Length: 374
Image (cartoon, rainbow, N blue to C red; front, side, top):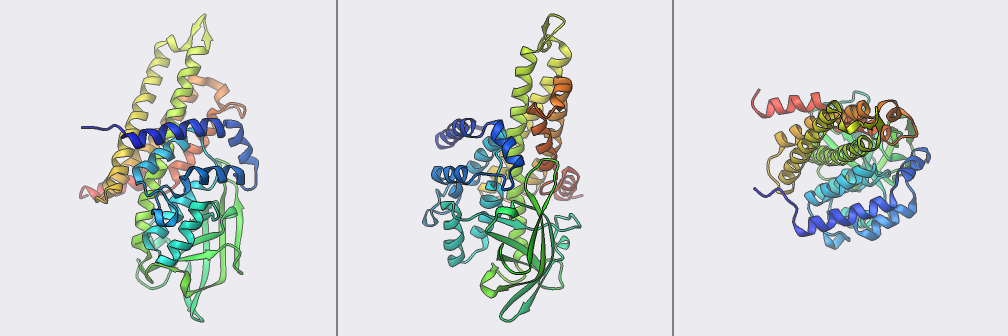
């Protein structure tokens, strides 16, 4: 069984790592935590120049037409450096949703805009209930003047503060799955974006919709047919987030190994003590587990295979494993790892957000149980 990367994938990994290590040091990550936008336009232009913004889009829309495994590889490298900014929300959450459900005109407008770096977008799904199922969508879209009037509240919308358009999930019928998707310009009257404070200092927002009018052309896909598209987006998002967390876990392990080698206690490096060695061995096992289960799910999605169980298993395992890796790293580092000056706390805070995005481990363990027949 060959679990390795092909030549194209290895080249992507190598070039991505070299670029991100040079262009996204920890100092940039810290600066963007304090920056209102959370990214710089100059850095975004560089990503566009590399072709990363159109990585999985068709060539006719300015993309590279690579697959989901290649995107997972890139996200893993981004997770290693904690890349800030709207890449995940724009390319994966919004762009892949449009690629799945959009009309030719919508794809031409939005995918081309994303690939070129002109457009930043996001997906507004979750609400105050915090649910990740169709019942959690309570925002309403009612017919009005040839279009629709949107009302409701969306929570924890990533990078809405810098998005040009927001894809809003809203209820358009009485059945649980009667959910539709609408592409809404962020400057539309009645749409209010409020920044939220988060443990990771990432850019999440509340979006309030007060009689927000959109024309009929804003509908993405079929009326009341949006939930099947959202289910695919949730699967992509969950595995993409696993790839990011895998990168973070690997970097946390590498950081801990380096610290254990150079930290001297009782006249010898702490890495020579059995307790530290066992801690690091546990971390390494968790990281490898994350790697195999993440890429198994990514491959299944890329091949268009039924992957509900694989996705749920990956998100449940990686969410908990990344948390364990970070907590064990803190045990090895001691008090210094909790200081703002040390990079370890950056990863620990991101681990918590990654755990909750697209459903936590308990949510996905229930999905695994259902997938195996319980």
